[in-house]
Image (cartoon, rainbow, N blue to C red):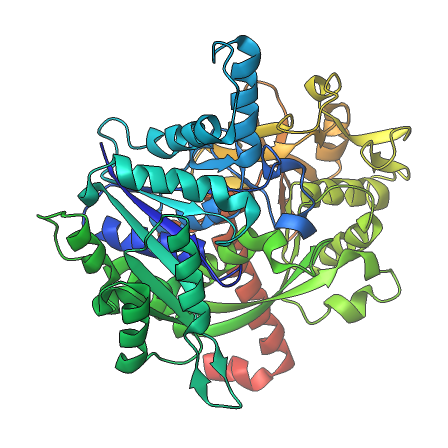
Length: 549
C-alpha cells in the first residue's frame, strides 16, 4: 500500500492548501516517486457541476468525465498527470453511497450513523487510490477549515487512520496563517496556536506546520510555534507570498519540506529533485521578451476563479512564447455596438469564454464581429465558438435570425441546437456531454497547423452543438468545420481561413494545458497576438521598421 499525506487548513479559507499540496507532490515526483493527489470537499452537492461559478469558481472536468473541484486543475498542471473521478469526493457523494447501501439492505438492519458508517466510507475512499502498486504516495487535501461543522467527519476519519495505519505510513500537514500587524510591525502566532489546538482536540496531531505569511519568519517565531504546537522546529515551514503560484515548489524545496516529509515517512533511496524544466519555465515566465494584452470576454469576470484554467493556460503559453500575457477581463453584458471599439481597440487578441444562459450573449456576439472585421486574433471556447457561428450567420451569411436554442427555444434559425441525446434528459447534475472525445482534423487548415496531427482528444462539457443542417451553407460562405467527431459528425472546430487567426472549438482545451505541456491552441493564439502587436506597432512607428531592417 502507498503512504498517505493529509493536508488540512486552519484560521481562514483560501490559504492555498491546493497549491501547497500540489507543490509538495511536485517535489516528491521530481525525486522519482509516483504521486497523485485527491480532494475531499465538505459540501453536500454531489459534485460542483450544478454550482454557479460565482459560488465555487470553475468546474474542472477530468478525462473520464467527472465534474470536479478546480483544485484538480492545479494538481494536473503541476504534476502533468491525469486525475479522475476517484480524485475528488464530496460529502454529497459520501452520503449518497451510504444511503444507497442502506436502501439495498447492506447494513443488515443496523442503525446507520455518522460514526462508523459515514467515516468508514470516507476512509474507504481515502485509501482507494493507494491500493495496488500504482502510486508510492497519495496526498489528500481536506477542503474547508478546521473547526467547520461539515469538516468534522473528515477529521475523524483521519484520526482513525492515524490509529489504524503504521506510524510511518501517514503524515499530516497543517496549513495556517501568521498574520502581520502593520501597526505593531509584528507577526502574531496566536491564530496558529488556536488552530493547531482545535485540530489536536479532534485527535489529529500535525507532523508539519506550513505558515502562510506576508513577512519572513525568524527562528524565534519558528521556535515558538514548534514549542506550543508540539512539532520539531524543522517541521515549521515558512510559506511567504510568491509572485506566481509556480514559484511555490521552489520555495518549499528551499524550506526542505520534501526532505522532512520523506524522513517522517521513512522513505529512502530517493534521488535529488530534478526541477530543471520547471526552473526553465520560471525563467521564461519572470523574464519575458515581449508583452501583449488579451481581452477575455466573459460573464463571470468579477471572480477570477471562474476562468482559472484559461488564465493559467495563458501563463503556460506566454512562457512558451517568452511573452508576458496581460489578460484584461471584460464583462460581455456591457459591450454594445456603440462602445465596442473603445473597449477592444487596444487589445492584441480576443478570447470569448465559455458560459451558460442568455445574459451577456449579445455583447459576446458584438465582440466577435469586431474581431472578425478588424483582423484581431480570435479564439472562442465552447459558448465562444457558438457565438462566432451565430455572428457569422447573422452578419455574413444573411441568416438574420441565427440563434441558439439555449437562448431561444423557438428560434426559426437554430444554427446552434441541443444535442439529440440531450433532449431526453431532465436531470441536471452530471448529464452533459462530459469527458474526453476524439476529434478528426482536416489537413491544410489552421487547426491542423496548430496541432500537427489529424486526430486529437479533448475534454468536453456541453449540451448544445453546431447544427449540421447549416454546415454546407457555412462552408460555402467561408467558415469551415476543420475538426469533427469521427463517430457522430459533431463539429468540434470552426475557423475562418481568410482571417489571420480566427478559430473556435466546442471543447475545453484549457483543461489540458500544463506547465510542461502548454496547450497548442493557446500557444499559437498567443503567438498570433504577439505577431499582431508587432505589426500594429511597426506601422505606428516606422522607425521600428527601419531598425528591424
